[in-house]
Length: 260
Image (spheres, rainbow, N blue to C red):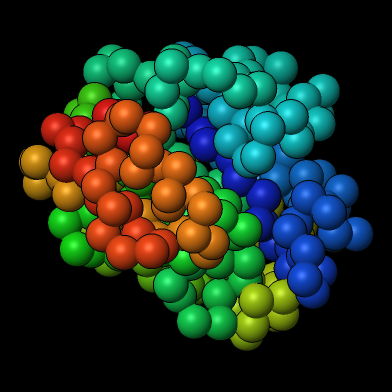
């Protein structure tokens, strides 16, 4: 059995950012990276204890250099940095499942902690086939195109609800209850680590019950920007984006990998 754990930072226990800042610029960022490392490591240990032969931890937040790699189980392989050919570096059809640690709700979710899709400063929202989507759906569909299911997610309550609506049967740990963009009531970080370990072990047992997530093809992909200039540039860059209005562009593609 082989698995990949994708690790974001906004959805981990006690990460709330700072007002009017992205997480990377807030005083909360160093702690969020430490806790993301701990939560990813708990998931990795559970996978190895369940018989995994390979576990890749993909440092998926921002520039991909966030985790304390020495503190990860030394049996792990680590994908970090930027410039990979596609999301889920190293993934192919031979993997048994992928996991999401530290993920967050999409940008159209009210009162969700640091909710955004790909960039909290760039986009208002994204849609596929007129359905609002976030990073959970994008990465689930990216894995689904290889026939690989997302078997587990750890996030705030709204991120978990988003994942469960997309992927019936997915294992989950709620790290915190969202109250506002920068406010939540979190479980103690150590308790979250213990819950992730236990629930990942259960998710491995039930992995055959979870189906890969896929969008219906073709995909009508829409992006609405927060400023006019990026929409203008996208429509003029020769890559097939159509201008819908001042802030929105649209493109029809065969698969999510055509975008990411």
